[in-house]
Image (tube, rainbow, N blue to C red; front, side, top):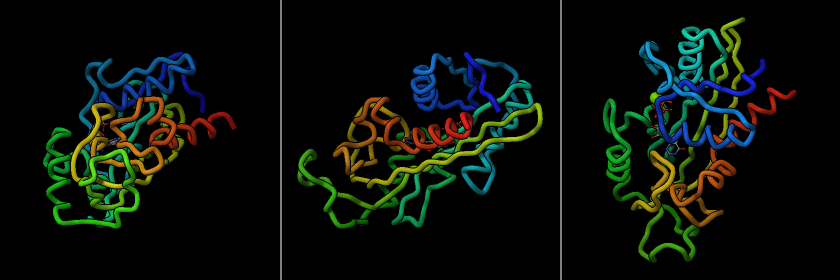
Length: 214
Ligand SMILES: O=P(O)(O)OP(=O)(O)OP(=O)(O)OC[C@H]1O[C@@H](n2cnc3c(O)ncnc32)[C@H](O)[C@@H]1O
Ligand SMILES: [Mg+2]
């Protein structure tokens, strides 16, 4: 399958994802369009059991409607102390349509009293900041082609720790609570370029691009 040479449509209504995909594709001279750029798209119910299933649901619905290849991203946070929650429920952890602030507050509430070995905290944070649990961000991408009904899939993940308060103004979602040990910052303290280099989304996208070029 080939991506459009100058435009790629991403089946998302998440402005943070749009910013990150625009950054990544912009380096290739490709413009990103999202669901904000079209009217009359059907409602999408993300009721798949996995990130990959939900990514395919989104890509297929929008791809079939527009009759062009469409990329979709389903992603989320899997917290070890919560047995992998919120996982595929990350967007609606604090309830249907919940905002990032409410989801972050819910995460801190669920992790009240949790704690792990504090080894990864070194230096750059106030000394009383606590690591609550190890965690992974996961991203599944699907690129659906309505011409033949096939799809390409790719996944990426990044490991880190949930900390007990928020740092950083960048990124979106759970980024201010996600400590990246190798960079000694939260995901929200990284530039878009830095985040792309290490993130679940950056890894999934580079794996998808490898499939497209081979
Ligand atoms: O479905 P679309 O329209 O793409 O937008 P969404 O925000 O609903 O996206 P998801 O269904 O994939 O839900 C993913 C949730 O997981 C969180 N998440 C995903 N990627 C993230 C990232 O890079 N940084 C922080 N949080 C992220 C964020 O809260 C999202 O709302
Ligand atoms: Mg969603």
